[in-house]
Length: 358
Image (tube, rainbow, N blue to C red; front, side):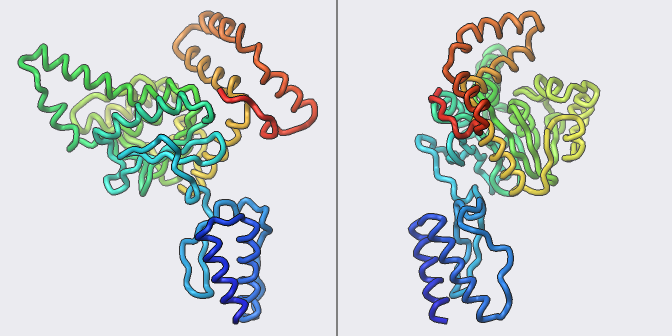
């Protein structure tokens, strides 16, 4: 019993000081050995300290000898420097990967005034961050986003401050173009952005995810182009981007005219998302793993690919070929090509290659 108490105290101390996974593993093993001796039952499923499960350990419950540990990557993420917001939480998920969360869980991540302003600030900073190579965006709490927070925006939209129709119109147009930039800034960001969606993705949420490069969702996710139900046409990106994302104008019209729910399996079938995962935790792990894979590649290659994919979406094949020729006449002179080719010929993983910041 003394050994178990000592091990439990040691584990508590290690967790409070964030010691290495190796130290944590040995302490957990000692506690488990004590538990096995006391109960006479073997301990199953334990892995060594090098296992990914033991990276980023946090204690979710501690009580005497019995310990409960939650082994999730997101719980160990550190706040990203220079990213302090009211409506968002930005963390360094791992090397070269940032995780942006819509962080109003008590309001179902509804998009208030702070959100519309802070998203632009956040992604402009990410665009200039030479250390960031990929981004995951998700929603805190039980759903991705309930869309526009009408209570916060009613005064601006329903009570314009102009003296006549012309001035009211200019005022509203300025608001709309600023709100459009909230999602366009994601598309303009040269770093690939992966949307990780769970629960409801409603109204403004659909506007947001269609500006992202890749979309994963959990099985409980559903999508609604909700604007017609509140008496307006979607005006910050869905009607412009959704047809190009799924390539089915009839389905886009149906969703936009009726505001019906599209469930996860239908979203996968039509191409709105590329993967459906069992739940939020598994889906986030998959999105972060994808971001890590992308971030292991040459940033010159990845960011150039995003820029050219977006250009090709909005231009003819001939125009796009001319654009990429002009682009690569300089980008082909990067040292990243030699480094990547050398890694391939030596059967090394690209994650072992050090690429300069961009």
